[in-house]
Length: 224
Image (cartoon, rainbow, N blue to C red):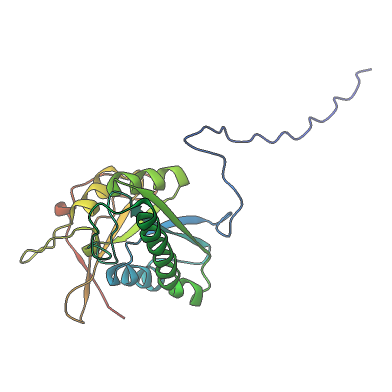
C-alpha cells in the first residue's frame, strides 16, 4: 500500500534585491493596480498636469507617485530659474542654509501640487530625488520604482514654441525616447482656453513602442 504523498508546503519567493534596485517597502501606493508617475517641476504647468491626470486619466485602483528631481548643480525655483540671487563664493554655512530653505520650499510646493489627489481620494506618494541630470534621473526613477506610465507637463521641462504643431522640450523629448514606460506629455496653452496634450503616449502599456514626439498629432483636451 502506497503511503499518501504529503502536500508541499507553500513557499514564498521574494524578488531578488541589489544595491541598484532595493526591495520595495510598504507604502500607501502598495497593491495598486497601476502605479503612475506624475513628474513635477513645481510650476503652474505641473499643477495643471496633476489636475488633468485626475480629471482625464486616473481611474479607481490607481496610485500616483509625484516625482520631482531637485537639481544639485545650482538652486532652481519653480520656473527652473534661479531661486534667489546667486551669492558668489558662498560659505559652507550659507550654501547649507540656501539648500535647507529650498528643500523646505520644495516639500511645501509638492504638498500643494498634491491637493487634487487628496480631494479625489487617490493614494499617492511624494518622491523627491536630488541629482544633476534631470532627464536621465527621471527615467531611472521610473524604472527603479517599477512605474507603468509617466505623465508630465512640457513647459517647465524646457518646451519650445513654434507655429502649428507643438514641439516637446528637451526633457520631455528625452523621456519619450528613453523611458521604459509610456509617457503622456500635457501642454498648457498661454491663453485660458483649451490645453493640448501631445500624443507622446508610446503604444500600449503592455507593449510600449518608442516614437519621435513629432510623429504624433496632438489631441484636444478641455481645460476644466
